[in-house]
Length: 265
Image 1 (cartoon, rainbow, N blue to C red):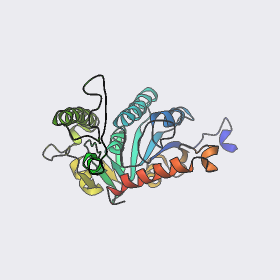
Image 2: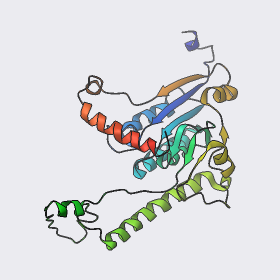
Image 3: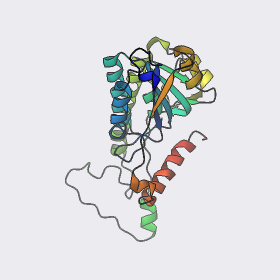
Image 4: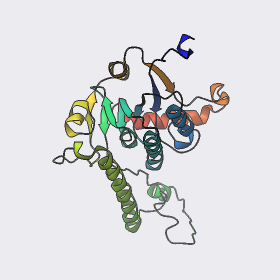
C-alpha cells in the first residue's frame, strides 16, 4: 500500500514473459502470436518496467509464429525504449532460438541447449503397405502440385525438389534474423547454421548467447534487491481445467514430448 503513496518512489519492476512449449498457431498453442499478443503488449505497457525478461523453454515449431512473436517483441521494445533479456531454461532450439534472438541479450544456464538453426520437414510413406494390403489409392486434382508429397503415393523427385527449395528459403530467413540480431557477436569461423546444438558455454564462445546466469540474481544485481517481478503467461480456460478437451490436450502433450525428446529432454 505504501508503494502507491505519491511521495514514495515505487521499487523497479521487471516484466517476465514465459515462453514454454512448442511454437504453433492458433489460440490453443502454448506459444503462438494469437495467444501471447495481449500478454506481450501488457508486459511492455503496464507499470513502466525497467526491462522485459523472456523466459524461454522451447524446442521450436512454426517459423511464422516465431517470426510474428519476435517482431512484436522488437517493435514494443523500440517503441517503449525497454531492454529485453532472454533467459534460456532447458532449451532454446530452432524456433525457440529465433525467439531468444528477439532479445538484446541472451543468458542461459550452464546446461541449457541452444541453437538448431535449421529447418525440418518430416512425413512418412505408406504406399508400399497399402499395395501389400490390396488397397488402391485414388487421387484426382486440378493442378499438378495439389497432391504434392502425398504420403500414400510414391515420392516424386520434383515434389522433393520443391520442398527443399521452400525449406531453403525459410532457412535463409532464419539465418538473416540471427545475423541481424547477433551481428558481430557471431563467430565467423564456425558453421553455425547447419542445425547443430550446443551447451551454454560453447554457445557463448560461438557468440550465440551473451552469458551464463539466472533471472532473479541477474536482475537484482542490475536493478537492486527490491526489484519486483511481474510474470505473464497464458492461462488455461475453464473447459481445459475441467478436462473437456482431454483428447486434444493428450495428443498435443505427446507431440510436445516428442519435440523435447529430440534434445534428450
